Length: 259
Image (cartoon, rainbow, N blue to C red; front, side, top):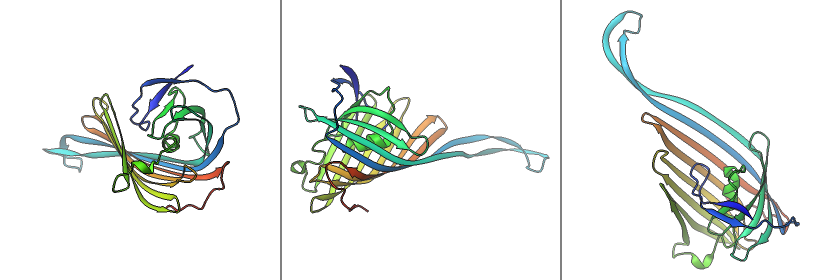
């Protein structure tokens, strides 16, 4: 038996509880999936400054006057490549055992990690291993019955919530259209972390989901995370993730119907 952790949130705000599932013997996957991905992120650290200016700006001394403002320090990176997900088995409790890995042009490479995923967005894995945000976003939509049409409300909407110490998450999904079993889904996830590492993260996106094949064919998301690091320092991180199904060992990949 190997210890795994339950992950409901992105790397910026992880809610984990201990759990276990048995490692299966090496077997050929039931389903082999490859997704192409692009990832971009930008960060802006804003530092409020204040002080006393005793110069006139021309090198001579002048009367004291307050000086204040905001200094911004920006950065960012981008990458692209493929993510491979091998479905190894279905578990009696409704989950799937999935091995996932990432092949990237630059730094966002990740080795094979074994996970257990569920239709309500739960992902169990050993968090001592590398798992990138784009892999987690894919895994959340790979669970069995991720879209359960019998549980949609009158507005074709469903919601997933979670909470923990100093943490809450609310994820809303709305089916905007259904074209011969190809669903166009709007999603929004709001994560609030309180305490010493307080942070708010809002993610808006679109998921194209093939109801017949029980598979997301496109995931496109924009996230904004804002964290107060010190009394006068705020860091804002914007992230864009784009995932597109490139190959599926069980079915021919259909033409994308997303935006």
